[in-house]
Length: 403
Image (cartoon, rainbow, N blue to C red; front, side, top):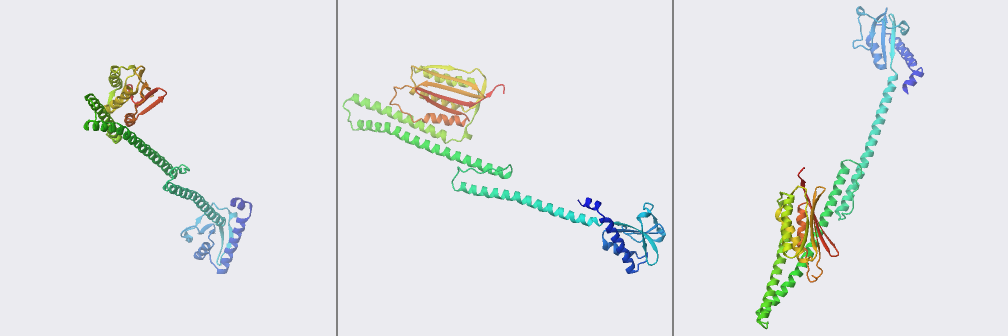
């Protein structure tokens, strides 16, 4: 805009004429001679935006742009590049000379505009920065208030995540920590409830045979039996109840061993999967068939490796097949199969429930122990009951030989 203004108007020429007029008046008022370089320099410095070149007899005798403005007459410099029409006549007190004038008055306005530009830019920069800082401080304040809500115990309140910077990452981290804490509390509640149910069931299951045992022993001690045959019956029943109590206490002890052992304490070994499962299942199938059960097993021909704790896995199969022998219908087939899918080993066991065992009750300690053991192997233990069918599915991670 300034360039257009200066090009379209006579601003520069009028300012130059004004400078020439002022300089001539300055010479006249101070009666300057052609050799008063200091006085001339003083005027040039006062004007700031003017440069003077004074010639005498076509020789440059004064240059306001040089550090040493005085040039001896013996060292006059010719300046062939200046046309005659650019020179102005100037009269000093002792001689006439010619002068070339360069004016830079437009620079004053350029400086002003540059200063205004810098000021406006700085103001805009500060305004934009304050705007974004305000947004961040508002977001920080919101995070603070939401964290106080979490501190108050309301863990269901979700932290707001805005943007994609460090603050949003922090908010996301708090959210994940909140979810993990909720999951941990839920897990602890489930464990507490499971332990409570276990204790309730165990107290009932232990109290029943224990009460009967005490009653039989009282009959024997106080000789309330009528015949020796009754005595033998009471002794036999006392023995059965004692073994029943021993079995329940062993299961309870096994349950607490499994649930109070850290996962890091589990020592894993690598086995050939087919050999291991064939061995474990053949042992259980042999016991089943020896007790009059009918079984059917479908094996997997895919070679694979599996890392397990042998004692723990054997305990899982012992518990599962022990339940089958207690609650399964002998006239129905016990189906067992294992197969590979998506880098996982699936073991599926299914049996028909014997509905005639109405008096048999179970605390479920064995199955809970199995579930915990499989979880410690990073697997899944799924129990399914549908009408008269009971099934168990175990899934564990494996490594195929071609991996």
